[in-house]
Amino acid sequence: MNIKFKEKQKFTQWWIWMILIGLSIIPIYGIYEQLIKGNPVGNKPVSDAGMIILSIFIFGFIYFNWYITLITEINDNGIKMRFVPFLKKNIKWNELKSMKIVNYGFVGYGIRLGSKYGTVYNINGNKGLAIELKNGKKFVIGTQNETKLNSTLKKMPVANNVYN
Image: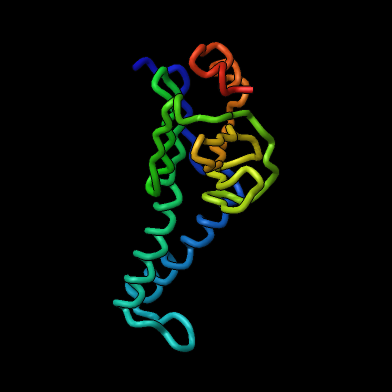
C-alpha cells in the first residue's frame, strides 16, 4: 500500500489565530488580576474557581482549533480521509462512481452540509476533490494542493475510470 498522495491541512488563516490569540487575553488578564493580584475583575466578578474553569474552557477551545486536521491519502487501495477528531472515511476505488477537482465556492470552514456537491470537508480555500459514490452519497475533500492531486490521480490507472 504505497501512498501516492498525502496532504495534511490545519487552520493557518492569520485572522482566525488573531481572534483566538485575542480571546486568550481574557483568561490571562483575569488570572493575573484576580488570582495573582487579588483584584476582582468586573462589576460582578466570577469566583476564583469560575475564573479557572473559564480559562480552561478558552484555552481548550484554542487547542481544539490547533488540533483539528484534515488528512487526505490516496493509494492503490483508494482514498482515505480523516477530519481529526471528527471522522474517518476509507473509500475503495470500486465504490466510486465519479470524482473531479472542483471550485465549490466559499462555504465556510469545517464540515459544511448542503452544497451542490454534498458535504464539504475543508480547512481553507474553495477547491477540493468532489466524490460521488455508487450508493449516491456525495462529498468534497478540500485541498490546498490541487496541482499535485490532479497529477497523482491522472497517473493512477485505477483512478482513470472515475476521474474526469
